[in-house]
Image (tube, rainbow, N blue to C red; front, side):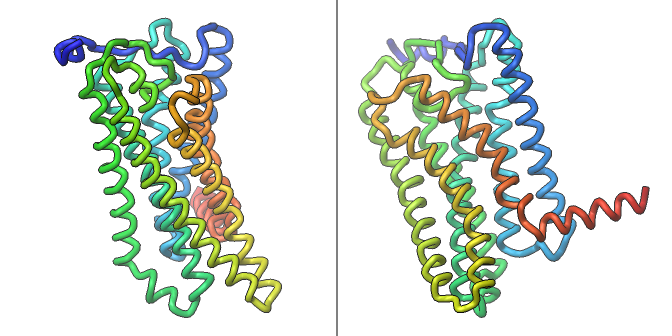
Length: 310
């Protein structure tokens, strides 16, 4: 099949999560509630961080960018999935599929990089508290944030070239235009593409995961050296919630992209992608910030001011 057949394929069919009507209605209600909860929470976090100058620290700057990334990521896949829950024809135009894959990859990679930047920030705060303000200055924070986003877009651009391959099929065994699902539509040897996926996965996930674990390893060592029980409790409590998010993000990403394609099924990939695309963004603000005393204190102050004006 030649290149001209690819341009003829103007749309794809997404099989989604279920083909039965009743489960799809229930799934629509469930995922709509999760989607709205995630978007509203992330917008609230960004708003609170911008309104309170006391939250203009590197940790909260990274957190606000992470919330923005989560909003973009969940909007790349979930609205289309919600529409398909109530549609008989689950089609998506070719260029919409390309855009969906590009944005989802461009937003998922920076999330992993941001987790590493946040781990480094906590490492400096715990291990070198007296030099924290000097090390984590504004220029470094902006550079790390810009580097995270640039690396994500570069990785996404490299991965979306799979649409240049000739495609023999139009039915995608997924609820979104996910990379491994799209690769299965090609009618040529994709050994090189598998190698590229493995290399990209190793560089983006394994290397970043190693740096995160290295940072938290140093944090644990520093906590064990603290003589104050209160200090140990405060430092370990701050890092515990971060490690939960790290485990969820890296665990699902590694499970999806670093397994041999022959050993994975479409149904497994759907469930893992669903967790990564919907559940993780929903839990991130809850774990990272809504359990944080400073963020909760800020939200109460803002709500108090609004009630006084009312």
